Length: 140
Length: 140
DNA sequence: AGGTCAAATGCAATGGTGTTGCATTACGGC
DNA sequence: GCCGTAATGCAACACCATTGCATTTGACCT
Ligand SMILES: [Mn+2]
Ligand SMILES: [Mn+2]
Ligand SMILES: [Zn+2]
Ligand SMILES: [Zn+2]
Image (tube, rainbow over all chains, first blue to last red; front, side):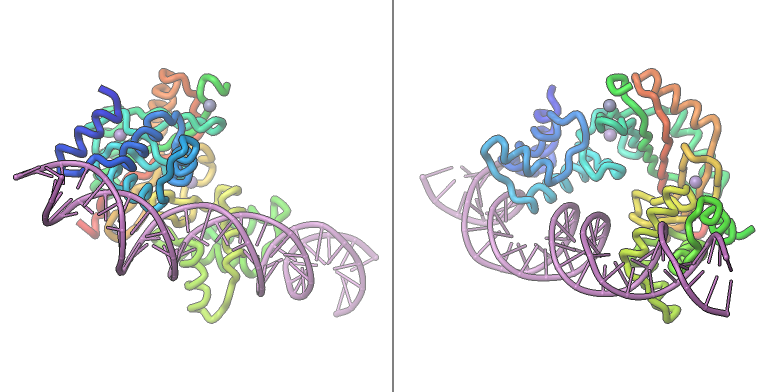
């Protein structure tokens, strides 16, 4: 099932309406290889001859984040679709510093190790975020 | 040697001037336990009866980041002093979601593991960033 | 110490990002 | 098809960050 279709199922199952703006945002995020900002999405939608208010885009992205369907990539100020669903407490990305291409990954051992280090430092860690940058194979 | 003194040595050695604004910013960052934003720093300086333009603060922080003396904490939008100098490509933080207290850490094995995963995914990783959140021992 | 000059700062203006309140629209259920 | 409520659009606003330019000042030299 595609990301858009899956997301629509999640929206319905949680009692949220499936509206044109939400479809448009999901579609823009699905197509993007690199993170897209709210204003990027605004432009993408315009290029298809349609229009969304930026407030709406912010609100939709906020909802999708809360449902873990999309992630905000802090180092880029943009949003990407979640490729690894059902990992609510662990979000790891490789981002190409050249073209912005992004890949999500996860690793059990990494999480364990990080939690151990945190424990040694007196922390109880709940949420792991990694945004490593480098070069994708195309940009090398 | 204190963070401020060390930073001043670095500034001098690279040919940058040691100015009142730069001293003030370094001092504010040194004292802070949690990340401070440019406007936080503006307020801190004012409370000492002095004044710095916010533009200057942005420029100073930009310089200090480029010298790896301070880091921007993306998940908090603030800046912290670097506790682990000479680790230019690896920046890892534990942040308390309650009080914002932050600790920097590093781990050789973690870096190796991440680089390997990146390689498997066709990336050449150069820069490791993690920001794990949870609760510090005081907030538990 | 004082003079010199490039680097750094302050100020004003501007642009970008994100939020809020409220009137209007449209989705989902009947 | 109608209804009620959730979602959207619009306007206004608050905050964050950057740019250009005139003025100041720290580092260096004498
Ligand atoms: Mn994910
Ligand atoms: Mn560091
Ligand atoms: Zn690339
Ligand atoms: Zn705490």
